[in-house]
Length: 236
Figure 1: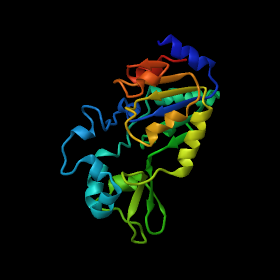
Figure 2: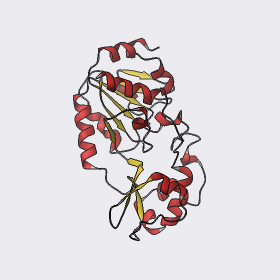
Figure 3: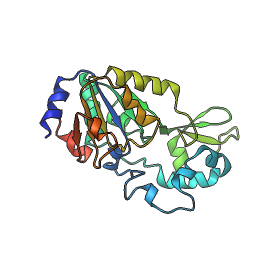
Figure 4: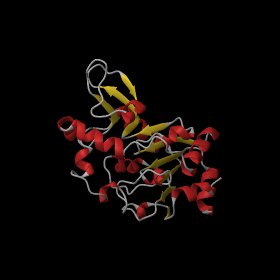
């Protein structure tokens, strides 16, 4: 166990966790930018292109072919990191989870105060009438999913070229600003504007937990290069 981190967790009352794809890799969901992640696999178009607003509008059927195969992991279960964060929230120690992930695993583990910067695959709405559609309908369907009204159904996921939700961002910013312990885990801190949110942290206990080094390691008060599930499983 990392004793300094364990002590800080015990002493903190306003913990905020900021996480990325690496948080869910131990649940079997591939990391986009790791060596074995989606960005290193070969498709007719690069994932960044497919997962863009313009591609969704122009080649919707091809978008959904990729999306169903590579973005929907509905059988994935929360790992030790997700469960520990939910436990801290229930104890009144954690005030928010800020995540770049779209898999809903934090909520599945029991977390309530989750700021999903990039949306969620679990929510889908008709672009014409706004009706909600369950993710199972998307996963089990073929071609372009259509609403009863004839409109195209779109996942509530922030695609490249789209803006983040203002309400979600403001909530995340407020939580980070008030935190007395900010733990950043499972992210390369390469995606902006999300990565820029850590600049709002005013405290003196900034922890980075990531398998590989990040551009922000030198700013952190504690850096741990270990699997995040292993680290969290050992915390109080």
